Image (tube, rainbow, N blue to C red):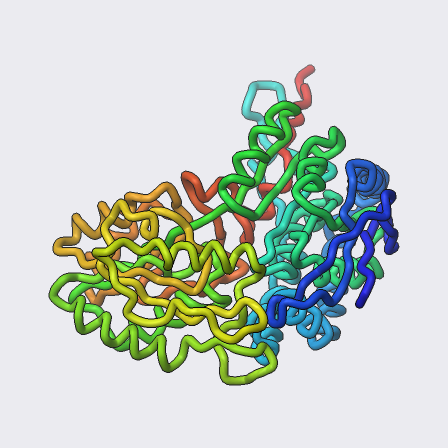
Length: 476
C-alpha cells in the first residue's frame, strides 16, 4: 500500500488535515495506495506557491521556457516504461500499448508546446493612428487552476500544464480522486527543470475541486470533465470573473454512407468505439448507417467487435481495452443496458466479465430511436449504438440532434458529400474516412455542451495568454 502525497512548491507534502482516501486498481477492485483528500487550506497553500513561482517563471524568456519543456519531455521519455507501469495500475489500461499510445504522444505534445513558447502571434507594430505607434504584447495570465479526468490522467495533465507553462503561467492541477498517481509522477519529473511553485498537484474529491475554483488566486480555471462539472465550474468562476476553459462530454456521430468501404469502416469503428473502454469523449459511439447497407454493415461491425474489441487483464497482450474506471461508472454503464427499451436489441456484449475488477464486454445496440437516452446521453463505456437513416438530410439532422458538439466522422467515397457534411456537422472536429486520430498541431475542443476553448495546437497555447495593447505617441 503506497502513500501518495500532494506535490507543492517542488516537494511531496501530506495534506494539512491528514485525511486520505483509498485508490483502487480497477483491474482487480483492490486498493493499492492512499491519497490525500485535500482541503481548502491545502489548495490555498498550492496556489500561494504557484503565485510566488509566477513572479519568477513569468520573467523567463520564451527560449528559457522552451528549453525547460524540452528537458521535461526528454525526462518523461526516458521514464516512459515507469510512467506506463504507474498509469496501468492507475487506470487498468493495457500495459502493452501504453508507451506507444499515451506516453509517446504526451512527450510529443510537450515538445510541441515547447516550440509554441517561441512562436507568439500578434498584429504587426505600426502606426494605426496618426502620430502613434501601436504594438501587441502577448503575456501569461497568471496562476491557472486545472482539473483533469480519470480517462487519460497523465495525458490530460500534459494537455493542461504544457501550454500553460509554455506561456509563462504557473499551475495547480487536481487529478481525479480515482487516478492521482501518474499526475503526481509527472509533477515530480517536471520539478527537476522548473522553479519551485511552477507545477503543483493537489489530490482530493469534489470538495477539493470546488475549493480549486472558489479560491481567489487563480486568474483562470480549466477543466476536462463532465457537463455537470463544467456547468458548476462556470457558475462558480463567474462570481470572481475568472477565465474558464472547458472540455466536456461528447456523443460523436459516425455517419456511414451507402458508398463507404464498409469493411474498412467496420474495422476502424470497432477500434474507435471501444478503445479505452469507450471512455473517450470523442469515441465513435453513435453510428448512423444508410438503410441500403445497414444490415450488411451491422453484421460486419459485430464480427469485428467480437474478434478485436476484447477486454481482460491489462497484463495481457491480446486485448484492446481494460476495465471501466471505477465501480460507480460500471454501475452507470450497466444501467443503460438494463434500461434498454423493448424496441432495441443487444447485438453482442453488454455483460460483465469475470468476478474481479470492472470489466464489461463490448456492446453493440441496434433499433434505438433518436430520442432514446442511449442516443442522447453520453454513456462513457464500451457501448455503441447503430441507427438506420434514409437520406443525407436525415443523417445530418440526427447527427446534430444532441446537446454535444465535440467530434464526428463521415465515411464516404464521394468528395462533394464529404465537404458538404464537414460544413454542416456542428462539431469541433470532423473526421473523414477515419475516426479518433489527433495531432498536436491541430486543435481539440467542441461546441455547445461539449464546452469551449481549445486543447493542443497554437490555439490551445493562445488560450493561456492575455493580449495587451501598447501605444506610444511619436509626434513632435
